[in-house]
Amino acid sequence: MNLNAGKNWGYQPTLSRKIVRRICKFFIIFFRLNGRTKFSNEFIQMLDPRFTTNFDGRKLVFRTGNGRLLWRAKTLTTEEPLMNSWIKSVQSTDVVLDVGANVGVYTLPIAQKAKMVYACELDPLNVAILKENVVLNSLQDRVMIIPVACGESIAFVDIKFRALAYGDALQSIAGGDVLDSYLGKLPHSMKSLQMPLDGLFAATGATRPNKIKIDVDGNEETVLKGMSSLLATASEVYFEDSFTMACRNFMNSLNEMGYQEIEQYEIFSKDGKFRSLGFNRIFTKSS
Image 1 (cartoon, one colour):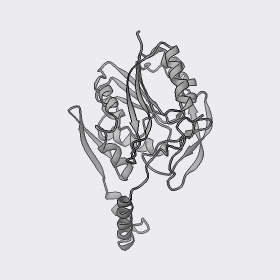
Image 2: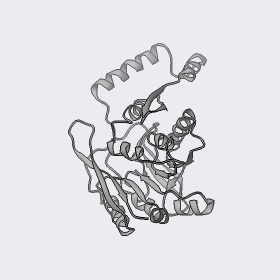
Image 3: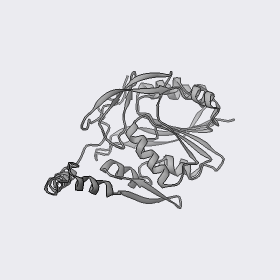
Image 4: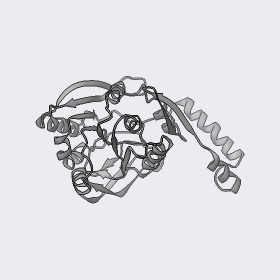
């Protein structure tokens, strides 16, 4: 059951953005920058769009190239205040599991402080940008990318994607809550590999995380079924609550494991109507 139906998650371009896109399209057509000629391919290849910012006194570089990627990089320090304070609390001895890493906007500042970050991301397009961001910031030794859908079993599962776009979110693993959202160009479904995180960490002997971030857009229940052991041995969880039944059940499970909520921050829509979309929440438990 989706308790947040009709909220229309996701980005919808404004009139000014549509005008900018039309102008760009004119230049692309006029100068034949459509990838069909040797010149246009070399021109595109030479483009190197990046955005440099600072977080907690440290420099960060992000690959851009579309409006969504630029927005994610530019709003690092303003979009989620609770996340920012949580990252600042990370210690050099912490091992962090980031479930729903997207392109690494929060993975990178966490990795600059933590001992190790495991970054889980199911969209191959996002994984490509995530890897590039890791290398651009020389964090290869502190970030382990897990490029699979996190779920209850090893299987090939259907995943619904909103678009064929770098930096997109709100993908839905079969059986999860589908958050109402705007669809972009080329929405589609395809089979992808799913793995339970408990089994993955047990099989590889990887160091278990003591802090876990979970932002999985309606896929909370299947993710929970595959990582209950990791949650049981961790001490802190940062969780995005989207007002769905899956989120409610996930938080109930955290309470049963001994977690207690210590802080929250309300999430609002970005369309200027200030509709509540959920909460970012921090849960901790005694060791």
